[in-house]
Length: 519
Ligand code: SF4
Ligand code: SF4
Image (tube, rainbow, N blue to C red):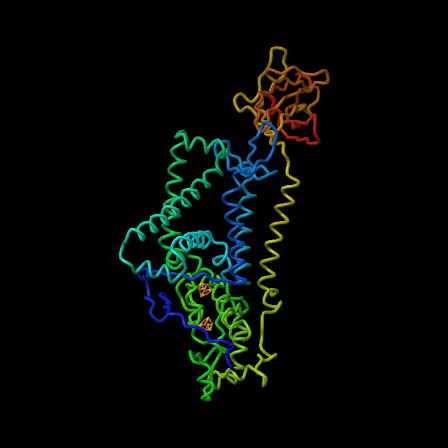
């Protein structure tokens, strides 16, 4: 097949190429990724804008909870032991919601990885997003790949010094903003911002900003791909989650090989040539410094930028896109078997093409089966089950809690008229951000009377107890029974607490002790 136009071969070395990689640690060689363009790059821009937007802006969103709770939409209020998420307020005893969300996040990651490989690493991992952001700054100041390589090789001059200073200064600003944004999730953001700038914030706020500034600057600006290769455990763990039906970024050597820099000439001479023109476009865009044509590698974060680069080359050559593509091992093996006559012959791309030069219809491509299989369906079912369970627990949860503690010493008191009195500590927890008035009474203890320290009884014997918003109110309660009504058995009865303005009612069973029952 004749090329529509010549493709320039880029002078590039995959600095982390499989062939020259050290077994364990290798000192970092600088990578100067070229700006890619294409569908995956655009998708990455979108994900980057969304994730950074969420991270930096969410603490500034307000949510009106009345005058009794903070108006920050998302707030981890450590001092008051509350977590606010828009209309949801989580108390410490409801931490299982957070645990459930973490389990869902883990299962979601399993589902994502078993379906589309390391998509988390390639698109949404904070390390990837911040490295991408730092690269945007680097390109804006020092230019694209060739300018940066040239600048790096130059001896230090005033121009180089100014460019480098500007780059590192902006990186540091981003790093400070990153650390700064983090602390705003733990206190009222506008107030804390003023406190930080006026030197009135707590030491922990400054130390957190300093720590996150350092890690963001070093990981995002200086270490970059080394964090993924050497520090992150995920590349190792994800191997257990991939199988032959998982999609990974793959160089389809069954149509690319034998690669040739002079395909036109070689083909004219009767040589077998594949679609790869060995232009290195896929190598120069790779942020990990690898060559995808070496096969699956631990370093590959499946960012798919090499797909964009190669698709651009294929477009220029007038060939079908997808020499590098998201492919499953099953599909790859089937296509390779076609190109090698079942593995008996060297690759001959002619075997995967029809007489008119088109890719054969028998080739296998991404299908719905890659997504819908037992493993992914199981992960999805578990994920949904936990999600539905959490939502159900959330919408049916009670916002009123009651606890009753019987006095232990003494368990009862004999009064001068012979009646018996038991003491209790009644705890009423108002879990909403509004004041409430609770009606308290007892049921099931014949002829008894109730007294609550500091509160007058109503005519029906019940008590109206105001409880502050989002607070626990502790009451000292005395229950008295006349001598003739007492028995020698432990009697059980119920405290009934009713919200006078809402539908919530709580009952709590308690015991009544008498001299006879304690023998
Ligand atoms: S090989 Fe391709 S998919 Fe893998 S990290 Fe490099 S550019 Fe991204
Ligand atoms: S795989 Fe594509 S981008 Fe990479 S060298 Fe071959 S033709 Fe160029």
